Image (tube, rainbow, N blue to C red):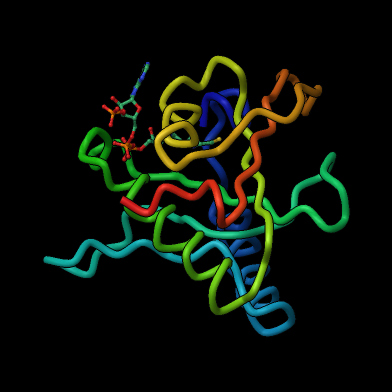
Length: 143
Ligand SMILES: CC(C)(COP(=O)(O)OP(=O)(O)OC[C@H]1O[C@@H](n2cnc3c(N)ncnc32)[C@H](O)[C@@H]1OP(=O)(O)O)[C@@H](O)C(=O)NCCC(=O)NCCS
């Protein structure tokens, strides 16, 4: 949570609110931050998918990724983002997505580079300066 809340974990209520919001967004708009389940066990290990963020334009769908620390460093966030973005471009029919990360969040920015994102702008977000990157189907590195 270092680059999201400044290091404060979400309460159970906040987690429940997040999940409820995803269920509503999926019903209303056809996409959401998906639950990531480990294939072998089915255990929840994170979230990845499209959402809306304060500070972005109304039409900007933001793809985000969060993994349990025990699952970092295996390429899972990149794999999940690739699947979520493919779904947003094909089934949902978006022609552009964006992602946002604190400029110090090197792992997150590296994921954007691996997927073919390009830098758009820098802006304040809560206590951070964030970088906004965009991706279109033409730039999407599918492997
Ligand atoms: C960001 C996060 C999702 C990455 O998950 P992951 O599954 O480890 O990511 P991947 O393995 O798919 O890719 C990460 C890339 O960043 C690189 N990386 C990781 N830490 C890095 C660092 N400190 N500096 C530079 N590069 C780094 C990795 O080497 C990898 O690149 P590579 O494939 O070229 O080697 C995970 O660290 C996380 O959940 N962090 C906390 C939540 C968060 O910050 N989410 C993003 C909010 S914008």
